[in-house]
Image 1: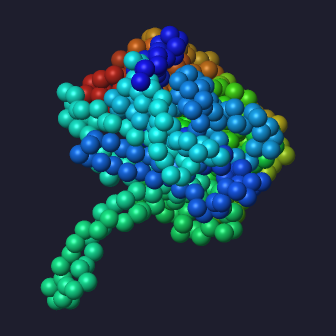
Image 2: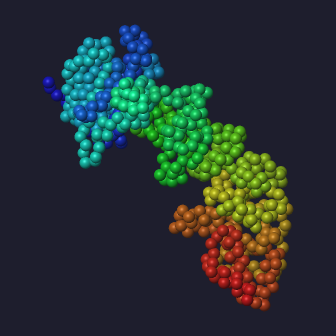
Image 3: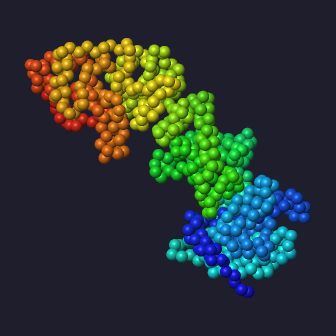
Length: 627
């Protein structure tokens, strides 16, 4: 019996595939099972028009057998089988796909078959764990069975064989373990086989069966002292019909909850479930979950975003990031489509039009679900926003505000007048006609913002202020710029734009005193001026237009080397007793006036949440004023 050689190109491809194309060895079983499913699909399709097949859909199955002593795994199917020439063409020439040829020959009539073997390379992934592979197969409609054997790049043989029924057996002899303990022997363990089927092939449409040991009570064993024995029974390892293939109205909430928690390792049921069935440019089904709690590691670099991606019931990717925008990375779920273009290893997607269409549609579905939650379940939405509101803000900020229009109505801000989170739509809807701007103020907490001296003038006019307690919020206002035709304006920095605001009256003495304070403080402040915001408070620190103090704190925390610093504008209430006291001693006791200036400056820093350069020195300074 002469050994046949792979073509030179096939030898190189086989060597490359075994060592490079596939990322994980464990996917060999997925590929072999997918090929078996394809073979059954072909015969099942033919049975629709050929009554000689003699098999109903319920008669088809795939079996897995493990012989630990012989170190073999056998995958058998009762599908269409292969002839001698097909063995030569499909297994003797790498990258020749029988499944692809079948679909091409059948044309549109085969559109409903879930055949995904497009490249003809998946079979050879078995050489990653096997040093010898035997294929015994009998083609439907033929009497003779054939055997194909190979140890890899050295070549293969094709000989006559015996097989009673049509179908194919793939017998993989598992390699001996190398330096790593249990490196290959793990694939001979029942629990490993079961877990790989569950992970990658759970939704193949035909049952995948395996003979497994079960402990049962001996029939003649007494009840008070039962004895047990081990018996082997055929067990179906895959569920076959995925939850997302069923109508949402036919699935109980408990089923969704169990699926979500088991599949994604969550401890609590999801807050919301989104079921999608789309036909058109791309046909796909999706089942998405909005978690009720923040997933472990979500706000860390170790979190793995992305949806699980299936093609014809076979898992292609565990975390397909391209299916969701970054701001919806908290969404968990699965997408299943027969229309996806797979790459040669069937592990990654080609970046094609289908993928972009699915991603855009899923984004719209998620936004629609969140808007529905906001309208129908306000308490539930506020809970969601507490968990993932920061992600929505990131979505507004990313890509120069490209997603601003679609996400802005989902944002919540604490309201100074309503004393609860509100939307921008609700804020603008309450604005009096005379109000030109959407006012906001940023700080570490609602309480600290509420006590800011700069907000006093707006509060006196019963104007609503949005309190921003996330350090990204000021960037958010800058990115949004306007909403409903109203411009955003900081209640803390810059001009409030109030037409009826009292005009600041500065006497010549006031101007001289302000100049004195500027000279005393030097370059620690960029400007000292009379304030038009302050009413009962003596002083505040503002940054004017541009970089704000909250932005400065943000950059200092994440990129201190940039040394980003906002302007320091010291605003003084020239009608306040503290300023009047300073002014009264400026000419008679300049040293004491300088101390007063220092106190006002440090008080302004404290109010703004900025650090004092010398806290101990400031304490001594205050105490010295008592002596």
